[in-house]
Image (cartoon, rainbow, N blue to C red; front, top):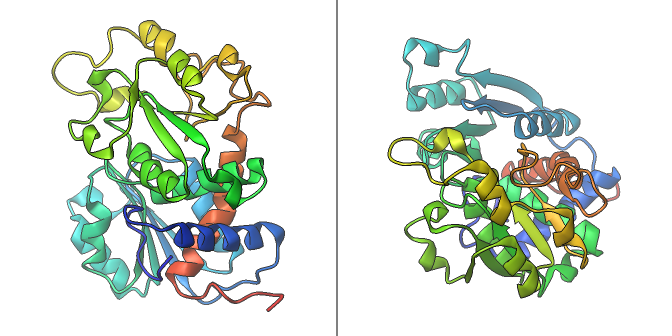
Length: 308
């Protein structure tokens, strides 16, 4: 992965992915020293987050960085300050990296135009969430026995694709890793440009199992983004009937993934979330190592290794 900004995984290569995941495994095994000592990492989260915010903070601190946490509440944004002025302020205060989560798609790209700091997109509206896709690959490759084991695996991306920045990141990343993908969603939850991906669209999780999915990647039903017009789904129980992952779907050896938070009984059955066939805990656990690697690569200090 090139140094500096991480805004999207569109156009990423297999070599880029391997570089991040190899370094993340070094971090996970403790063979990397504190490469971010003396660096300032600003976490600018203007949208609710638990997993991403906490794992980025742990990643930065464990790698030796000084961390500044900024949210809309308690900052000058409450007084009407715009994104550009906020980014310029952080730049002027000496931030080496800005990890940005924002409700507007394109916010990270805009921020990168107004700072010398590395900008890492931690989720921008319906745009991208690149580190989520990277930690997903880390968790899945660990489960399968290595990065090369991803090649040829079949992944069904299930659910609310239209509102999902995770889907827009995992689709290019998983394809770059050599995996075959299909989408499982009703037409009302597909983006208008979904055809540009060139992926088959299946009508239910049962059909995904018949297709031979090795991974059922369930997306959160984002009811808070369904504004205006008629509902995107007739009812939540009806949605869960066709697009919820149940234990029976995993009987043939498939695993379930979900970026969290999970609506239990909707996207994934409650008795499956922490099942042996679930990689959801592994995805969360992968966050710190992967985000440590991303921070180091973005600030071009990735090779400060204990064993070097």
